[in-house]
Image (tube, rainbow, N blue to C red; front, side, top):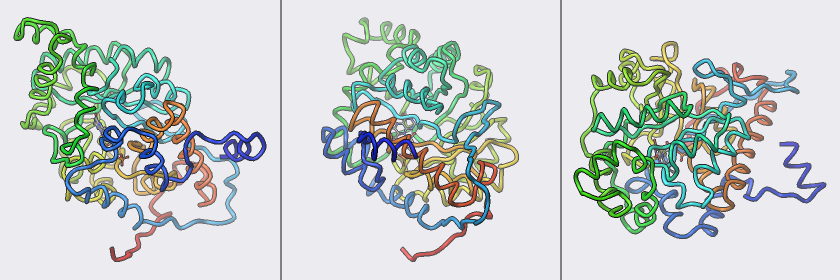
Length: 389
Ligand code: FNR
């Protein structure tokens, strides 16, 4: 935070993006092409769940403590035995090429520079191998959109493992794409363009099977390749709890289920031998009308907090939001749209500046709240208020 102020005041070096979280979306709208902007800013249905995600944060307030020495804050966390500089994680976001040519590889680079784990999406527009290289000695996790074709699934997992991805994140809430008016009204076009080099297409097993069926390489018929991929991955047919066995058998490392909203599902995740969950409603992009993600966090932590590592996303916009989620029991917090807006505005430097802003706010606000380290973020620091709306 000091760095941002100092450079601004004395060196006239300003961040490439606004530091006001409420203006970021507006700035992105001006900078990005309309369809790419609509793809990130959009949500399911009438975006009621996106609104609920934000309202949920407004209804929890910090209760600061005084005369505590918080001059030196420690924001480090340990997740699955690895220590990270902060509780932030880069949420998996697909087709980053449609936001900026810096795409996944650029964001993976800046994640490493900031010491933030990069969660790569199965729908990435860079390959597993390219992202691993860009991330270098940084921490990286792999997010699986779970194909029904087990051979393809196993191939993706093997490639991820071989390339140093340590944690497997399995997204459960997107076995079919939701009703997304923002995409249906036009943004879907850049998505299909971006899909051309998503990770499935570079997968040797998927490629072999495509060639057997269509008699040509994927590059010669990208549209059908995209349709084949969609048919398998966003098939409209969900997996079931017993099928997690396959992932356990084929992944030597922690497995985290993303998209858990009900405490009973959290308990089932623990029973199934999972290592963690991400309490998430996909940033309001899947089931519109679903409850604000933060609303469910305390109940879920109550149910499984001692058994599983509980992470959180959906609606986090500021460092203060991060503190609130941690106080309600999350061990780490994924950031989605904010850095995507930064990427759209000014490439990887924009994404970096957005994340630096959130980190600075987290650090400064922890100090002002009287919290010295992440362990100090507990339920005693927050109160729920009701504002009606
Ligand atoms: C996503 N998200 C997502 N999740 C996932 O598991 N795999 C993916 O490929 C994507 N792709 C994706 C694209 C875009 C443009 C967005 C905005 C989001 C969901 C993401 O990981 C995360 O759950 C939400 O973004 C969190 O909510 P906020 O921070 O955007 O409010």
